[in-house]
Length: 129
Picture 1 (cartoon, one colour):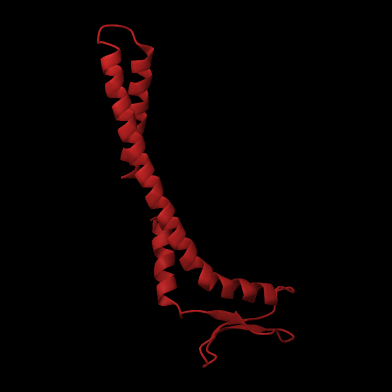
Picture 2 (picture 1 turned 60 degrees about the vertical axis):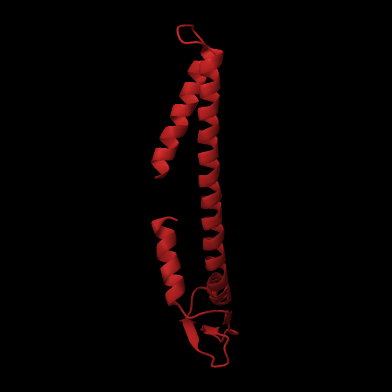
């Protein structure tokens, strides 16, 4: 996970739990509140050029969306890392096969391409760590 994701996760954990809801706007304000029976106000939004309801709805929706998106991002990052490791292993196997198929001392474009791919994969893995 990235530093930004870690920071968002910490902010999310420290915030009032959800669900959050937006109240009906008055002439100049709208509240975002915690739906737990206490009516705790999370945010009091003042005049914002006709965007009161949209801003409040976004804040309330973000409370549920951000943890879900962080979880999804974490899962995708893990899947990406697994695929990169599998790709590097396959490229190593290809390089080994091409060493057998193209004996040393003979020009073999296949071996050169395989070695370039294996080197690229190894460099990509190093950058991830």
